[in-house]
Image (cartoon, rainbow, N blue to C red; front, side):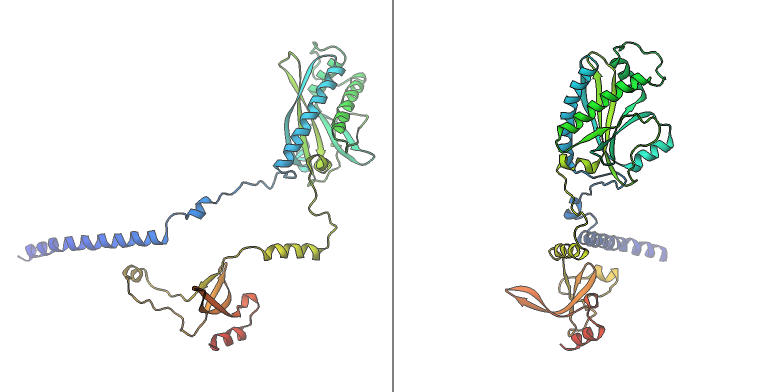
Length: 349
């Protein structure tokens, strides 16, 4: 009897329990929707651009576009030089333009044997500002073509003869003149010898270099060789139109004033917080329309004005032109207000 009665009562209560569970689940779902379980529309639109701090970014995209136009003009002039020196038809195209820190090349030289020949060049009578790099294989191929022996491929690993070095230097000197002649602000002069071992540039690790690589191909041939100009980025400012934002001619006070002026114009979100309180999750679930929620601040205490999670001012509610407003009474400690001043402001109302 008691067993049947218990079972009966249990069965009778089941629908009620199921209903309560269902209502609880609905409230929880509504609460989660109100709080938000997904990114807001503004947050979803935020896109972060990837930035590699280990790579040089001396030139921006617009400046690189100008540099690419300059390199195309150099390639056309180089085609004419190769055709004249090697007595044949050649085609020279821009292979790539990249930016580097000097440390990139120094680490490569320390990790492996030098595989390129370097012919440095300088701007006027100043220090060496760049170099022309040629692989040993390309140097041998060009030397044979300069001698009119374009078909022979013997002794691919041999060193250049003195005659071949002289002819190669003449060709590279002509290429440097081409590079210098496209822009009238250049006055580059190539060295009289080939550097076969060692790094000829005296650049610091953090100095930025631009590498402009060219693909050289003889007409009718499926083989090509590469040469590149490696030059200090600062030497290319006239070509790209880059200007230094700060050259050291301004005082620290002037720079600080400019920065402060920009900061003063930045938009800042300020939040007015009347008060707050701590309640349980169960109490949140039971809240309904017309309920009264008691906050933790007396009515004679000022409200807080908050910026980036920090209270910066205190004030009292007001209205102006039909809108909510706040009458500021005192700055918070974050903006220099003392404890005594803040306490006095709170008690004065």
